[in-house]
Image (cartoon, rainbow, N blue to C red; front, side, top):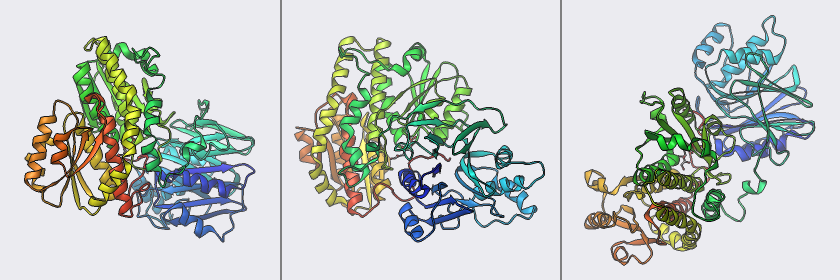
Length: 612
Ligand code: F6R
């Protein structure tokens, strides 16, 4: 979390920093700040969003062509003006922005306090900036860069940092360990940012920094070395991102835009992966590893939040059709619980951002244990994508709304293709069934389009339930993860307490919640579970709960039982998750909107969770 940005060149730096911070605000919005080098290092910072920083800075001197900026998601120290970044060292020689966590900060701070260094903030970052200054002031240290490297060699934890030094004002020093940093290469200018979005309108040439590397940037020169002072390996690549992707267009919120983009993002995700004869699925990033996947003893899928829900859909699909044992785990649990992993295992990490700290660490651990590791990521060039032996990108485009929507359906699309292909390779389904599945997938975008057309009705229904205090979401089979995802969407953006449950579990506890105030969202399809779901609905009705049912068009049985209906076109149960989730995304969106919540930037959250 936290977004960092930097620029060195001839342009006026302040607008570049502000625009960059706005693009990175999805990474955290507790406070924002900038430092501009112009005969001294001028720091301006403010609690709250970037817009609040802009108002604060309105009458200040922001002239200069070198600067750094930060938007914060608080870890150490409450979100206030003092704890906001950038942080300045005690004697004012260094200013630093940081994304990550310095895990041994308490010990380092203690040592520095013993040496007479006085701290102003509660942050771990202030320790690092003072450590750099401390080394800079020692005999034999002849440059800011050297001081940065020595300080970093003492640090345990994760960081992406950019540092300015008062005595070397024409220089920016950046370093990465665990938190992403991208360098943009212009003509006589360089950009730095946590992702490429602040850079793309100036240049498409970028370097994704590697862990353990330090970059020294001047207007006309860039040096990349390791913390140990050896030359670093790097590659200049082209970013495939357009500014249009970063606009809200005619939509009121990014989340709404992203929900409505789904017909396109699903088809972008399968395009080029289904052959022109529509009789085979080709996942280019797995070509070299299919043999190992087919032979796998079991598949373990790891992820967090919404990505974990996509993994659950995959578990049902892979086990049913490919008949390979699948385990789905929260990455945060998997990485610490000493799981049994060996060479016959395939570990698949699912992550929109490709930067989630727990998922990345879990993946590295699985790799060390000899598993083949694969990734399904949305952000090209992200840390997880670069760590894997193979993988498939979801082509959802940039997702800016903090609540994930189009990334989920793109993940489920990839995982569904993966399950069908594996099932065919293992000869657990025949060619006719395989082709039927492909046809079902190709029909999904038009069907999602028709679900979206019902948005006025979904908005009307949302009006009825907007003041609810709790909500229950129920589903079975492939639609159980959809129930979890629907509940997560509602709670994270509207702050209504919502629980997702496997419908069969209801009578083992959650049914106690049911009364005439409780909305119960039941996700159903014409599948093997249908009759069971009908019984669950009866149980809720008998206790006066309000039923909002997601049903297949023409399902008159449930029409008569439910208080409200979201209808979806008929489809094969194996692809129904891609349709049933869409009305739930819209339902959560409209409720949050009517409750006056900040839909795109819900409280306490950030999109890219690069800390544990
Ligand atoms: C929920 C949401 C989060 C993310 C989770 C994992 O709407 O967005 O639960 O799904 O933080 O993030 P990624 O997929 O980037 O690893």
